[in-house]
Length: 117
Image (cartoon, rainbow, N blue to C red):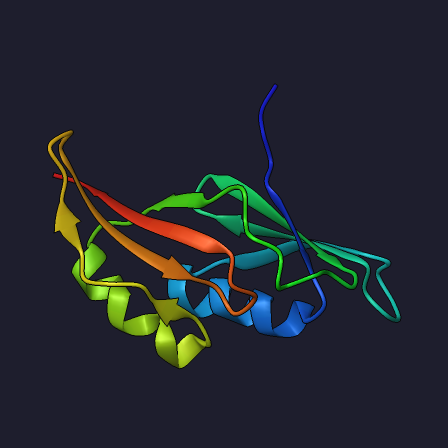
């Protein structure tokens, strides 16, 4: 049993490229196999992220954030904007033993870059 986040996006290629460029995601599944894609699954380390190609209201306030563990937040942060994302601010050391930076993917979905200290 597990949880798989799925992002609904009107621009699947841009969102997929962001997760590939920033986190090294690799495509592990697509549906349908030929023709216009409706669904893709990306692997990031041992986790899977789904992408659904569908119109979405990108002006709506996000109600969930992805938290993605990285080896070095400060090394990953400069990759965000060239990949089409947006950096909300610098990384900070948190009292619970993690270094965290808040960013947004190309659709404006919040993503926390987290590093265990």
